[in-house]
Length: 130
Image 1 (cartoon, rainbow, N blue to C red):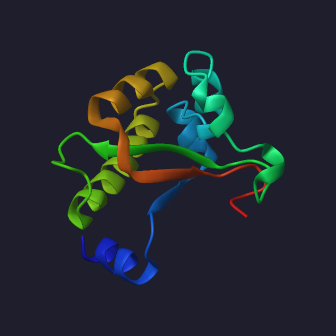
Image 2 (cartoon, rainbow, N blue to C red):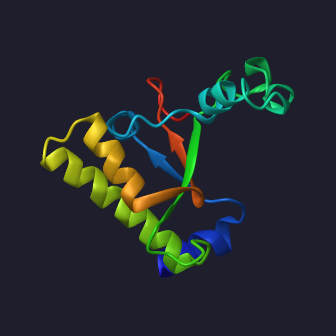
């Protein structure tokens, strides 16, 4: 909690956790633009809200879903954000150590986390997070 408190106090704004592409692949996490594009079929308002790729600083967006760990109350406090981050890292390590596949990993992710949440994820691309 203290480390998160320092980051939020000194850095200001939203807090993102960067995920390696292998972490995103383990849980089949989509980029936000992919999720919004798929949802825009059912919710047409999303079509007009999405940025064009040419408007993005990198040409694409590396933001994915936001999470809270299910054990948290609101997920917004520094302590609860720290819990969410550490539990996500622990779940990834568990899935890797046990050799779990995508389907099992996704099931465990849903059992431990919910979205939307207060910790946003930014997924590494092949060229990095530049």
